[in-house]
Image (cartoon, rainbow, N blue to C red; front, side, top):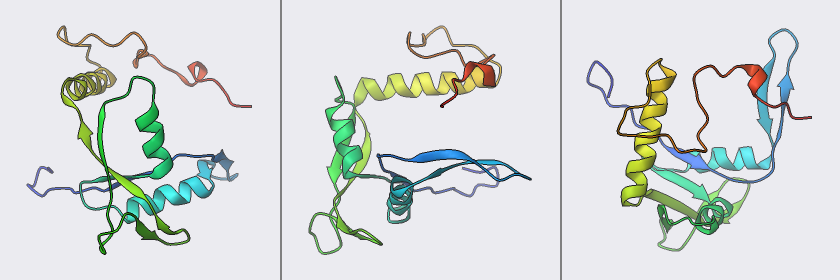
Length: 151
């Protein structure tokens, strides 16, 4: 909710697959991603609904089959005709899924870690009640030298 009381609504679309990334431009260089996966993710967003997360089928299977994953509540999206899938420009009818949220304790843990990470990024510290997981790197003090280059 914004300060003036208006509510901001978003829609989210995710797709998984190969992309090409690079810096383009000379006068004003920009980092960009290219490829069918990027376009498909854009279609997932544009055909999603307000305050919903729509994912492509490959993303669904990656999340569903991730080792030890039982975190996400997901369901197949039905089209306006009641059949599985929706029409996507350039793809035809494709099967997509909704992510409804995360299950119980896993949601609380992720939410706590995300909130704590945001607070750290603003110069705070981890609250005593939330210990960062061992595989979460420190956010403060990270420089471009810490990010590995892709050759």
